[in-house]
Image (cartoon, rainbow, N blue to C red; front, side, top):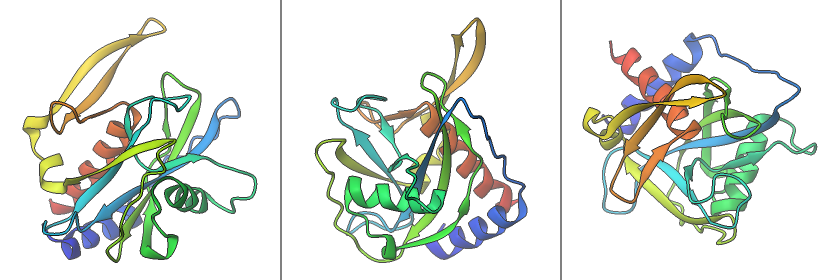
Length: 197
């Protein structure tokens, strides 16, 4: 699937589906950018960008996430939060992102956050620079790799006496995407596949 076909499916899917909004006052609002890129130079086809959190962050140490963070009072919208954080964390300029829409709000299970995922296409080549404090590196994974059923698995975990599924994308031995990021990614991939039907 090329970038044009992916954009067509995303435009259709994001405009058609009703979005789940979670407005719980006991949760901290956050927003992330799900960036679709052309991949590192020399690669082809759409890639999805993830950032690896450093061991110094207060939450989700060492985990892969989408660039993003807590909504601040100065942010005019969740989109603004996601774009601001993407600039602060990996030097992705806001004017290099074409925002397509929002996915469902996603609550984290081990921490008190509700995340609004913002889907955007990176429209020009960008040299990503992890800030070194919160983010230690950037990972761009081909969309086709993420759509391979062989790398996807689900485990049943228990929290507060309730079992719940936890998704994993085993990109490589070292690079495993799981937790809220994997739930957001699955929502994104399911929407693409629905639009193909």
